[in-house]
Image (cartoon, rainbow, N blue to C red; front, side, top):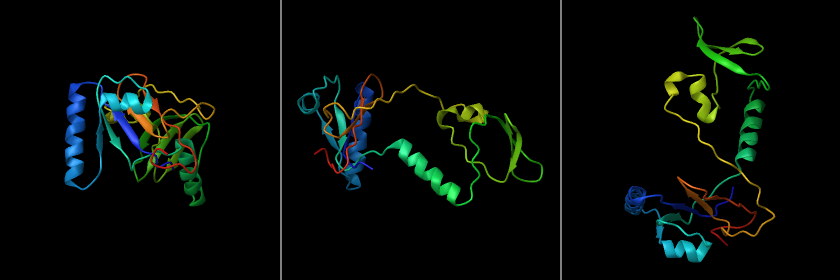
Length: 173
């Protein structure tokens, strides 16, 4: 866990209005969210933003791979059966109870299924077709200067996503 702040940069006027609405709602519930101007984003981070951003000083991020591995280890310790390198091609309800997983190794009967397919859930459950996958990249940046000052910086469009969690650092310092 890296509680290191979060800046989300708007991508258009409508997105800016949404940020204003979010800041207003947060203030009504005693949560602190700040608006950063384009000039503050440039001054703090060297990013030429076309719109302002919303900054949450008490937010942060986590290491997703370590989190998933930890969740998996806890589940297996509690008796969950894990099947790796087994492609699931279909999911069907069984007549009595539970589900049948149609896999590359045959059909597996089970009482419960944890669907952890992220944006690819609609491949198994077409009713989830509204969930769409989007491309993203991850780059290891431990060897470069931390221009983001440990903060998470995102935008809904464009090449902006920085997250450089560092041990022991909090609130951007």
